[in-house]
Image 1 (cartoon, protein in one colour):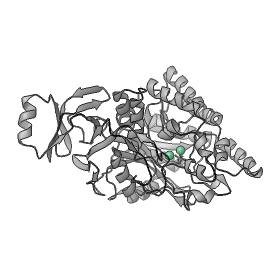
Image 2 (cartoon, protein in one colour; image 1 turned 60 degrees about the horizontal axis):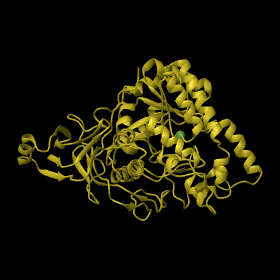
Image 3 (cartoon, protein in one colour; image 1 turned 90 degrees about the horizontal axis):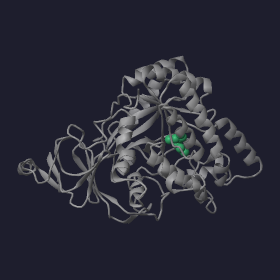
Image 4 (cartoon, helix red, strand yellow; image 1 turned 180 degrees about the horizontal axis):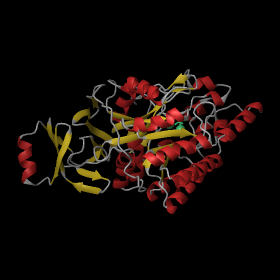
Length: 467
Ligand code: URP
Ligand code: ZN
Ligand code: ZN
């Protein structure tokens, strides 16, 4: 298909420019002045002109942190790669990077093969994988290079969840040495899981079993402490470090100090930490369970610090950590014991809209919105300039965004396969009008035109931020 997107304001991370976008097949071939003769002559031979007058034309969103079909706490996150990527497309996200998991006692290879089989042929949009390393040993350390050769260049380790995903400081050090030598990114779940498990056991002994105690037993100090420790280990080894789902002021301070020192430390936050708070976890009855994720939602004053971090680039990316569990039968596993509530929130569909609220409120520029939701994830995870920018030669992953399209988020109308919305009743200022994934229109003014299996596996290169 040859197409022209005409009349819109193209917003890249470099800033906005009035331009028409010319697409041939799966790729963008040119940005042209709408009044130029090139634009005119191209129009004679296109299959479709997409009118973007009064709209923003932005690179498709890249969600660098999702968990489709993720086993957790005796159940599994309810979005499949099919339903989750379809919902992502509805919300203007055209690439996800999900987490394949190494099970204890198994190889990284097996983990990657398992996740590839779940995703292949089912995704509506392009996808890649990070690898969760839950068993650091000589074999898995050797395999890191092998996987990098297959386009999996980032590896998540956990300082939380002892007995499940947890790695000791020594194991983290070993993985970081490999990452440093091979130019791989270490991603870190930075919470002190050993101390947290003691606090959880003490809370339950006292009979404190409601969802809100999930937050009380995972204090922000222990996120700050783990973030500090991860940064020092990265400093020692020279490994680049990416802190996932940063939620707390204390952790942000550690990241800022490291960055000021010139260390290759990066961090993402997530919409839930920018818009929701510990008060949501303390809602009446068992409703708070809807908001149980780790790190937990924090007291409201942290939000302002996180928005500031987004402006100053101490927070480089907003990802969702989309990990949906239904209230019925899944979150309910934790009735009477908050530690059994599966951890995670649904939001892959709403990230682009939610962060646009930052633009609408004057906290972020248009260019910064695009940068934190698309361009920096592309650069961070070795996808740039194929993804994350509207430029000749890039994939035609494009969102036509209406900056004034008020709509209210609700489980009754969302497309994620989950029985509640964490953002129920919130009104968004802007909304997605049209979405193209590699030149194919997948969302067109409220109609889904995509298909599962359209999305391809993305073999990722090294992060653009490596030195
Ligand atoms: O609560 C969360 N974040 N669930 C997903 C797993 C993780 O640690 O990212
Ligand atoms: Zn995590
Ligand atoms: Zn996660």
